[in-house]
Amino acid sequence: MMKRHLFFPLLCIIGLLSACHSKPKTTIQRPVFNGDSAYQYIQKQVQYGPRVPGTTAHHECVIWLVQTLERMGGSVEQQRGTMTNYEDQQMPVINLIAHFGSRDLNNRILLAAHYDTRPWSDEEEDYESRFTPIDGANDGASGVGVLLEVARQLGQLQQDSTRNLRGIDIVFFDCEDYGTPAFFTGTQKDNTWCLGSQFWAEWRSIRREQYQFGIVLDMVGAPDAVFPKEHYSVQYARNYVEKIWRAAAALGYGNLFTNRQEYPVVDDHYYINTLASIPCVDIIHYNRSSDTGFPFWWHTQQDNMNHISSATLQAVGEVVLKVITE
Image (cartoon, rainbow, N blue to C red):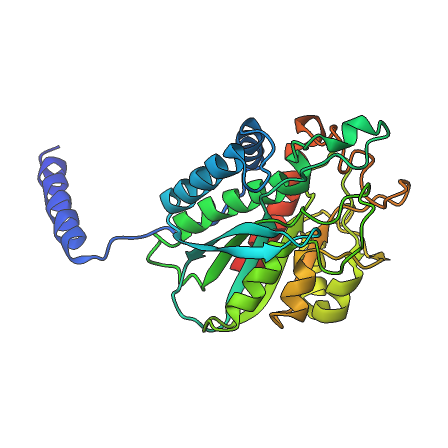
């Protein structure tokens, strides 16, 4: 017994001495997307009311988005200006750009969604109801909700000294949904949709950031969502389409990210591809059985939290995180 008592303190002393000279171990943090968290970010946006440019709800949402991104560790810029709308009126535009990871201006990744909502429910059957703005839970808020949860994960990763997080920029576009309403009887004009991304693409021409590729999220929250390969995405960014869809299959989400190619959609990614010359992929919900090709409640009063699923948000978020961090 005496030998054991003498030997035990000796082991403790040796252990303490070796601990003083050994380097502390650090655990490499792996990003874990939380679909419930993304759901709450969507709910918060909807609680402000329709985020129509120029309204109090829009203004309050901008303040919240900036504060939230900064709290998560992003370095946030606000790009402000005006664009001409479908009635030749000047529209205020506020794009939000949050920088994460490396500050190297080369070989960055762009993630984007629009945070504004449609000023009209112009797909409603009742004519009088068409002049009411929408909640935009799916069309707008869902993409923002997913990217806010991605931003939360990136903020944690960039605090991990063991990781060399590449430069990733998250952009929230304004005025995406201010395109010509279905009930408009005046002269139809081109390029009335996606005013925020058009403004950003023109502004970027004097910037120095170089992007490897981009991903736009739009209408990514529905329980029955299906994401086929959108035409312009394949045309301009085929390699990245394949990369994303392979990642989805590897994660077991091949039923959501189908291999079917669909018709072209003029979304924010179109102007990122054509004006900014950045290969960009649109992850967007199609519905072949509806007349519009989108969900039945698209641009109606039914675009609310009843059509948001944490499971769908989880799938999209996991795929995006896998692509940008691996």
